[in-house]
Length: 134
Image 1 (cartoon, helix red, strand yellow):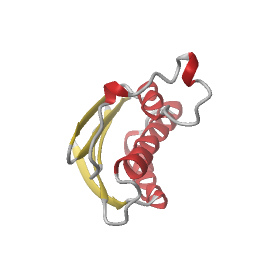
Image 2 (cartoon, helix red, strand yellow; image 1 turned 45 degrees about the vertical axis):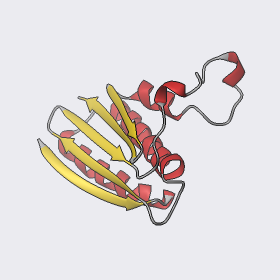
Image 3 (spheres, helix red, strand yellow; image 1 turned 180 degrees about the horizontal axis):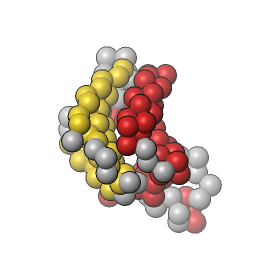
Image 4 (cartoon, one colour; image 1 turned 90 degrees about the horizontal axis):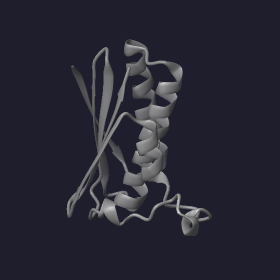
């Protein structure tokens, strides 16, 4: 298994650095196009959550990523420096009272696009783990 560590600042424009690296990695393992696009969307959503909700777009805070991959899968860990949150307290975005809200769908989208999703959150940040299998 190969491993790459990346650190970006809490700026949405930094997401492109990660996406470029992910494209390079996919060149080596060649996920089917639909799976790769879904994984890109899920990872980008997790990064936006880390930057906006976790780090509150603070220029003093970073987002840390670890990418592990081999010929069968890619696993990404994304950790912010925020104060954490309780994932169980998130409202269901598919319930009638939440359908027209403009936010609150990120975690739901991520879960639907990857093969494995984990969330660990504490007072020193939140870490998302996303995995896609070939």
